[in-house]
Image: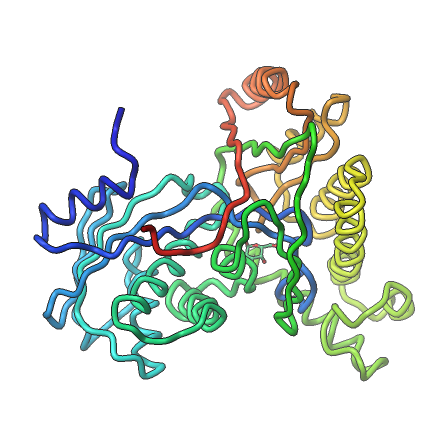
Length: 385
Ligand code: GLA
């Protein structure tokens, strides 16, 4: 059996650099409900998971950062004097270092080795985990005194300016602020948040990975943001108090429907309804009404697929397959869309049946197998003792 990842990093670090690293764990995330609501100043309900990236960090006394990825078996280094975005995994690390320096933090040269078990491209926010882990590790190493919320904002800024994806704040917030066995209801406008215990009784979540990631994802994501903004601009002419879709009601939207171009009405209607579903889902969770919670997952998928149009054939297929399974309470696509995973709420004892039936039908339909991940809800980014 191979060593746990943090131990592998420790060992490799001392071999390679001859120093003792600080070890950091930074998790991926799931989102229970509230999709594409974060950049509309709405609400989300994510949680950090037991799949994570682990890092070793130590000062190197140079003006360079030397980084080694265990999983890609690649190395890269860059000078602190000139940090340019490039491509690949190193961009995320450069993004954090550059942002820290821009914000006036005294970052010096360091060595870093990292590796993890978050499936890449599955929509579990491996890039947010990477960014958070680097920010958190350098904050500890150089005693920068940055609090968690500011570290989240640094990750977001790095993602926007270095990686070029105009994502919302959900992924980095969930990875940094996660709490074992709880989901986080985050108000993406005020950044106030509340933990909701997730007690699933005889049920569990199971992720099913389509194994597809469509290349249009980033451009379509940015288009959705623009469509929502178009909706807000027009709504605002009639209702000046509306500053984001978070402020709009479905009746106000219906009132100006004829003035909205093309698909904008459907995009906005989805966001308004998804925010409402999120509150209903929190109620269901608090009161142990998992059947209701499950139905809300299906309704969320319907909206994401038909109105917001960020699903794809494979995701729709996976969700449809579960509709006739009486041991599945709910299912939906999760994250940005166009590939990645579905989130399924199923009866624990039927897990094997679920996997067997879904695998067989997916293989018949698409000629390849999906992957399944069981996830536990864990704490956010932290130092490993
Ligand atoms: C991606 C983005 C998040 C969020 C989701 C959709 O994961 O990074 O900010 O917008 O899509 O809910």
